[in-house]
Structure formats: structure tokens, C-alpha cells
Length: 205
Image 1 (cartoon, helix red, strand yellow):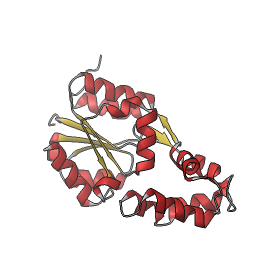
Image 2 (image 1 turned 90 degrees about the vertical axis):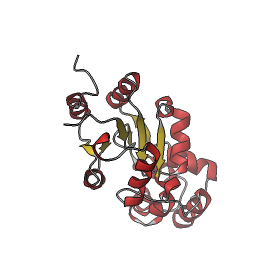
Image 3 (image 1 turned 60 degrees about the vertical axis):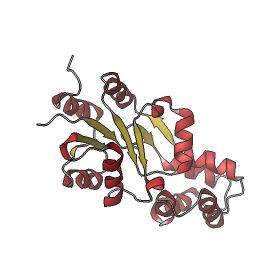
Image 4 (image 1 turned 45 degrees about the vertical axis):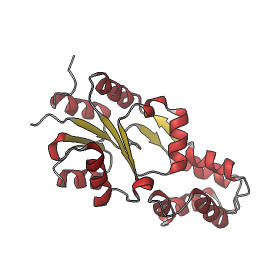
């Protein structure tokens, strides 16, 4: 088993938990559509994909949500409601900090949007402590598309088994494994830690 030289983290459900239902309830409280319809529109329509792969601006995203939902609040209120859905996963934040103390380069590799990232930068100090960030809306590609994986390799200069990648979605992990990356399907922080220890990146003490 080859010891990886970098560790690549997905963001949602790996370092930060999130729940879009928090946002849709707050948006629906100032809208004409009920929360269940707002949630379905955001999570099942192509809208979020277009926003998180770059061709749609935040204003255009807001305008479409407002048109569908009848949201009566301001853009600033909407942005706060939409982005404030995250909470830290403490065991994983601790694990990342331990890797950093050992001098291991780490990267964020996330399907996300600019409203979410602005909120995370302001509210979660750990987010500043990475060597680089591959974000779908900047790369204009979303996991598991090949382009975003190529962007990670180009940024890091690493390939294959040099890369250890943690993600909670099987299709994203599978796409990394197909490139020869070492992968962890995140299901439980203790299991992820145990695998990282077996790879020699952290001590077991």
C-alpha cells in the first residue's frame, strides 16, 4: 500500500454537515410556495447544477428562485438563508488539523457555489487551512465529471496513488478510483481515521 502524499477532502458531509431543508423553510416563510415545493425546486431541478457549474450568476439564481417561489425578501436575506445550512463535523475537523500539523498538504474538492463558500469562509476558520481549493463553480465542472478531477491533478501536480480522496458519494469516489487515486467513501469519521492511520499518515496513539 503506497503512502499518499496529499489528502483531498470533499466538503459537504465530510467536513461540514448540511441540510437544505433549513434554507427552504426560511425561504418559504417569505414566499407564496410551501417549503416542500421550494425544496423540490432547488434540489431536483437543473437550477442548482447550472449555478454550481458556473454559467449562472448568483443574481440569476436568485431571480429564478424568486420567480418560482414568490419570495418577498431581499437578495441579502435570500443569500443568508440559502448559505446558512452548515455545521462542523468535529471529528473530521480534528483529523484535518492533525494532518496539517504533520505537514501533509490538503485540498478542498467540492461541488458548491459562491454564496456557500463566502458563508463558509466567514464562519468556519478551519476552511482557511488548505493548500488549495477546487470548486465546481470556478472550474465549471461538477464531480463526477472528468474535467474537475483533471483540474485537481493540475493544481496539485499529483497523480494516481499519490492522492488520497475522501467523499461521501460513491459515484465521486469511483471516478477518483478510476484515475488510480486512493479513496475513502466517507460513512463514519472513525472509519475514515482508521484508514488514514493504516496508510501511515497519522499515528495510532
